[in-house]
Image (cartoon, rainbow, N blue to C red):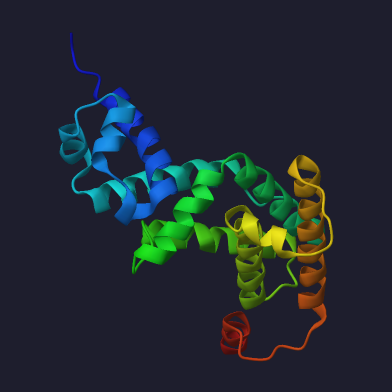
Amino acid sequence: MAWDTERTKRLLIEAGVAEFSSFGLAGARVDRIAEKAGVNKERIYQYFGKKEAFFSAVLEHELATTLAAVELSGHGVAAIADYAGRRFDYQREHPTFTRLLFWEGLELEAPVAEASRQKHAQAIVASAREAVPELSESDAQELLITVITLVDGWVALQTADRLFSTPLPRGRDRDARRRDFIVMTVEAATRAALTRTPVGPDPTRRRLAADG
């Protein structure tokens, strides 16, 4: 019977997502990943290389899945607020992705798949400016970073919610309330960006000035 290489890789990736999201790069164990996948651990080294390279492959796989699932589309300020809401929904359903991102930030000096992710980031910035043409490039960048930190921070820092004295609902009701507040915040920030006075040089404006 022929060995199903793609199936083996998929099983290892799935097991790697669970292991790395729980323990990070340093704490993850190749033996546990192989056992969970039902595969000899030598297959990990054969297909992915060392543990660091395997972590990168796992994160890159999850990134590709997320980027395909959540796009910024539509027109007007509401389009950016809606993107924040849909990213919130996706991250709450797939919390392992956010945890992988946090481990990446803690343990790696450079982002995984940096070049391809920069291209995607530039594409989202372009989508934001297509939705709201009045946004400068730098303000669009700041808004999208704000969306990511608001959404991913909520997923990764759940214990912080318990530190506030006011009793708050839990579970889905709490998520719904937090989602509404994040969407409201992003919408307000987008409107504020359209009316504020720039505090520094914007690359878009510099290019426009040079073209003129």
